[in-house]
Length: 298
Ligand SMILES: Nc1ncnc2c1ncn2[C@@H]1O[C@H](COP(=O)(O)OP(=O)(O)OP(=O)(O)O)[C@@H](O)[C@H]1O
Image (cartoon, rainbow, N blue to C red; front, side):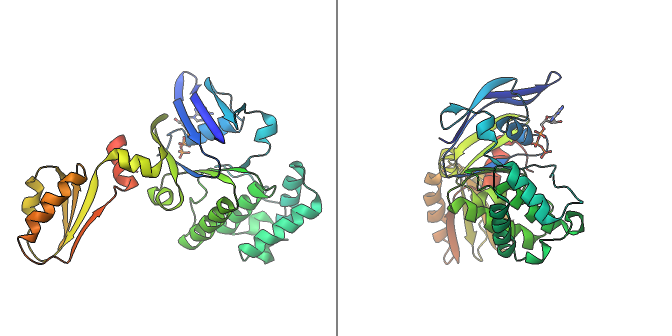
């Protein structure tokens, strides 16, 4: 395991912000921290980075207690962002790269590679404050990975960006992961976790509601979704055993069932009616899991 959090808690003036978190982030994984405002994501990241002292519990990295030598090697994109608006892009990146022990030449070379990758080489000598929000975020990401860290922690990396820039940053994050970096990121958007991660935790009011590999979380959750499309009225299915919920959007019905064993009896009922265009059993979405475990959506 790259990173292990055990019984990790943090209180501020008697108020618990993070409450007994236990989780493992496997080496080389893409790990999503999913939770609404105030769930405790940033506080957890700050403890991993040594910026906050835990009230209880501990953090290990490759089996060793995490310390400054390790945290200095982590790439971190802070939620509050942290670039100096008056500096030029190359001055800022060079400075941060050198703080992490890089030579000026190496920092410049890697900056050029990333600016090319993001198709914004013209931004190299512009002041940060002159860049659009999306382009500032790209520079912020470059700043956090310039030293080629093996563990990268990104706090809400996709928030506040237009869809084009979200895609550009997502593909950069995927590429870093495919080159071998372990990546942890926080988000309140289920679809980002659904698309990018193989493992996740859901935090709610400082508590870990669920954590682990997403395929196992889906399996343990048990519920499935059935989509049926056709011209017949099948609203009677909502009264069949195992059906938790049923929605109709024109000629499409979406059913939630307690587990897969209820799919076949439903199928047998509808074939009696004749032709249907579609009968599909889906895994539960992360949204379904979130709502079921937390009690409301985000
Ligand atoms: N320095 C601090 N002093 C006092 N309370 C704090 C401090 N930092 C965080 N908190 C509180 O801890 C709780 C968790 O906050 P945190 O920022 O970790 O949540 P988050 O999941 O990152 O949420 P968001 O998406 O809103 O940033 C909140 O109730 C917050 O007000």
